Length: 114
Image (tube, rainbow, N blue to C red):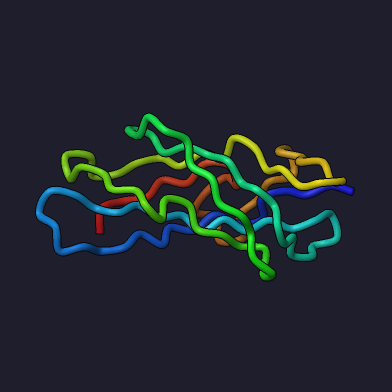
């Protein structure tokens, strides 16, 4: 069994802060048959942020990266990159990553200050 990233979307939250913003990326994981993968642990990182990020997919195969992240407004954009997707009894195949709306390559998504 294999799985891959099927979509990355910018779901950045607008804030009232004059100094920070909250970048968010919705990550969708599907198996080789196109079925949503629940319980996959997605690891990734945002440029300009030292610590890695992790989220776990829900029943629809999607989780949100960066939910507790705040970035200085001095950075008007940041790139989120998936580094691994872990699921018991299934292998992550990065070469199969895709993005149906074409706003990313399925591995890296650039998000912008709203």
